[in-house]
Length: 518
Image (cartoon, rainbow, N blue to C red; front, side, top):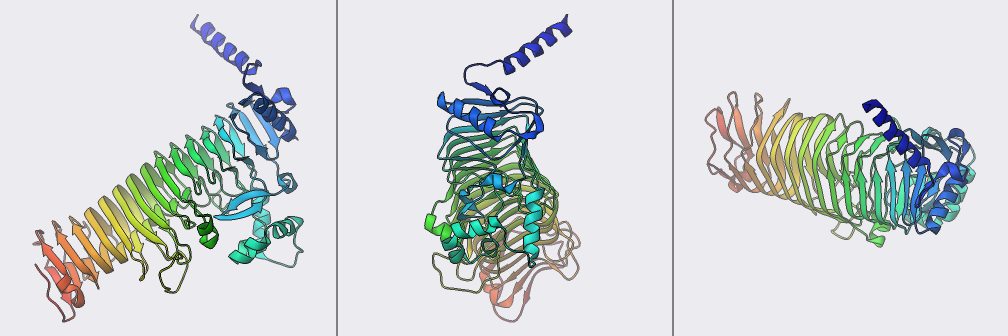
């Protein structure tokens, strides 16, 4: 009896899905073939237009494979991919013409249509248990061929891009713009409100996967994003100059940044001047890829970001906040907590204003600013525990590290910063000090220790520092030197309330100027 009842339930559900009901538009009924060979672009457009004409509704894809060109959503439209449904996107580049307004690596351009796009729409969604396959290999191969150079004539797509983007090509002087073949992003709503992407699996994007631009109220939830490790620039989720963003419960393994927060590039981004603000990223699993980044395209500014309860396993980096001279913009009020990082190939934590090599220059709108950034509750292992590097003319300011336990080849390296605090930080290095600080003004070292002291190496190394307070630290057995301070910094370091009796030398002063306070 139970088996019969369950069967009846499934049958009724299946019937309901196929039956024409109000607000529900099955693409098969508009001529879409689920054979994976026949292009369904026009049938999908008809379904969307019909739904929009009725005030909105759900465009439904039952199980099957649908080949299509770009899809443009309209207000109050939901694309619903049932389990077993796959949308495969055409590899005919002409299908993505005419070119449309877009943003590419933070630069406003006119480019190939995104695979799924919407312009100034509201209440749009892409949901379900189905799969979106961008078939990006054709795009990657053509792009890689162009990058390698050669004597082949420019393609018609490059010529069209150059014709439509003359001014921005001249302004930016950026090699990829000069090449003129910018692969389209997968999902890029543009100037939209109330955007939802939920449940779907996204594979093989030509370029960035989910990248809302100038949008408000964006929710990306329970999405799986997969691209090969060698696929170029296949970032997972990249909100760009958006407001009120929630990214949660996603699983990402890609060929570039897993998640990146952006707000425009250089003068082009500053002129538009739209920050990314109010962003929450929680409960995500990041595998292959470059980890989670803010920047480097952040010229419009980034503020009010929370990142919590995420796992990084095998990413190239953990958290990166990156910029360079010429970008400008302010990154502020960032809180990162409760992360597990394993097998991180480079830095677990990276804050750098030297993402590209630059020379010092006077402070101006071109100068990037990092301030009010807080890390807590982070465990794991990496090649580098933390690298924090500000500018001589604009130090990184007010950064705290609390409850951190990391195993790494090298430890914390802090340079050109002010107002830095380390509370209850344990760093076990393979070589070098647990913490090195140089040209830092205002440094509190509270409860910092290591379980792996090294011969002839201090646990903490301080050079050219001011206003340093070292307290409540414990030297573990085997420590030769706990704290080494350069002579020109000794007068600026206060050491009090520590348990350093296990160290052969508690505090060592190098050079012959100044005295330390013990």
